Image 1 (cartoon, rainbow, N blue to C red):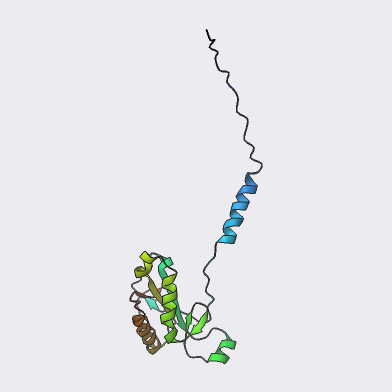
Image 2: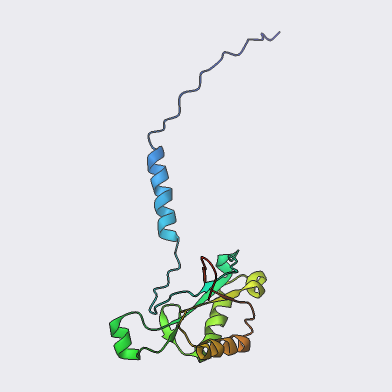
Length: 159
């Protein structure tokens, strides 16, 4: 007849944590290298107009920005003049290029999010409405109907 023996309790050795900082830094380094930040270098001066009714945009990953204003540096003013310019990504553009810009921005989005895309106009407060109207006409041609205007909150009554 077999003999039944009680199992002896074995102690589990301690886990070495000496390599834990190395693993954490490797993961941190991996995410730093693999993540790309979308940075747009402003080449126009931009001072937002003031408004009393402001809403924050909820999903900023679905927002594409169009900047409008005078050139930011003396070199750019000497080259392009002081008239307001349109900036798409990091360079000056003509209103006719807005359609291509919107198409490329849509291509970067998921297919389900393409109809939720919003175009934010960050126009300098001294920009003439003619430039804004030209941009809006091109946005209509590109079927980009959701437009928001960047503004700062007014601290009192607007005059």
